[in-house]
Image (cartoon, rainbow, N blue to C red; front, side, top):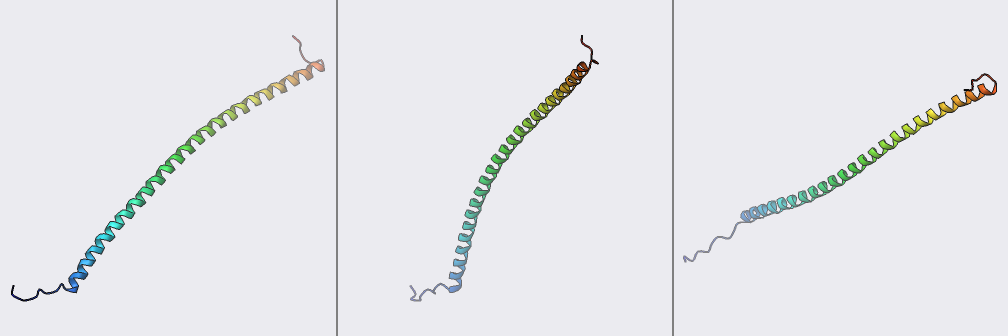
Length: 101
């Protein structure tokens, strides 16, 4: 013990220490926020995936309905042709032009 007092900590050292601590806290906060954003993104992505799957199912159902509608139209067209042919034969028979077998 020489009796000499130890030099006080300089203001520059204190400021440098505070700067390092603030950088560490800021980095930790950024990592925390980035993790939360990533979680939200993944949740949104999963929800969009489910919606896309539902839309694909709806499109498949709509495709099946359109095929059934086209087949029904084809059947109705065939029936209409058949009715036209029967009306023609009926008219021919009524006028005495048709052939009865």
